[in-house]
Length: 422
Image (cartoon, rainbow, N blue to C red; front, side, top):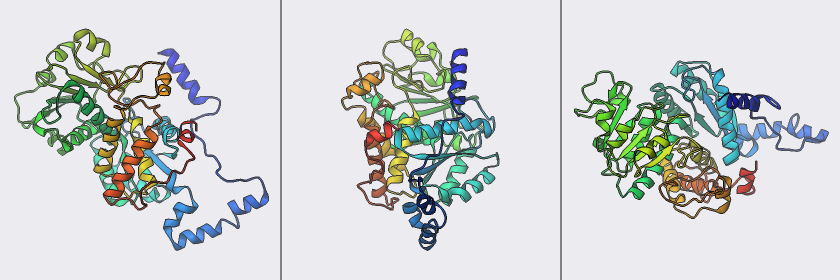
């Protein structure tokens, strides 16, 4: 761990601090170049945009620019450390946007824990951007913040901790159920965790056929059930009338376990109590709710996923957020709606079933990859993500009336390789 700490700190500090920089998109080698870039030439696009604000998409980088914004109240698994400590994570998010989808990012850290002050600040600066990615906001305030900004802004607003996690999780669970011989309508689901990601995952599962009465949510105080008086209204939507009170109770004969909580909270005994061919998504990072080693030592019929890249079936938001924004930006969508999220989930699910190119296998040490128990979700280095996922999202935006440009989409890059090669 000390080696990782040293390497991570050196990576962020050298050869220059940080992970992002601003680059030029036009020639600036002559006096005439500079006169066009700034005074007097810049006055011409200013006047055009003043005449028609939509022309900002033609004459500025607004249409390919996303704000990654946080107040640092829920940084990764580290808790509420404040806005400035969140900056390395926000820069990291920007790296992923640029690396995987060619999207430019400004990371913005706001010094306010007041939801209303945060909302007001983001709304006022939203005119600068083509989209807003909210990040590392604590629950339940994050729900209020996102809802208000969606209503007040005319560009896509997306809280990735909620929806990115939900989209990738749902895609993986549907594929895992298919392999296990189960159906979503009949699946008994236990969700350990009741924060933003957990609630959004369960809501998206319900929207595509999971039954609310088949879901048991468990938080730090036990089963979310109807006799409790300490539930906010987001948790209360999942309160069950049940005699079950503990995680152990909930796991009895369960088909699916989704962990979005903390390390080592699922025991071998709890795993043994689950139904045959159980599905275990232990997504706590860096240490999952149960280790894959313990899972496979306990029983041999489990389909296992984690949030880690060093095990099969990584549930990773990078499979979603760059590509859902790419699709939304390319048709200039006003919002990211449920249909666009489901389109992304379905495209991910179907991509996992296609033959895997050798280049992807080589990127992961030459391992053989094919749809099955150890490959239920695509790998982030699969170049097909940049075409298939944005296309599905863009089509859904057009079909549901939130797009302002037609489909087929216009690629702002020369090719898929331009994205993956920077």
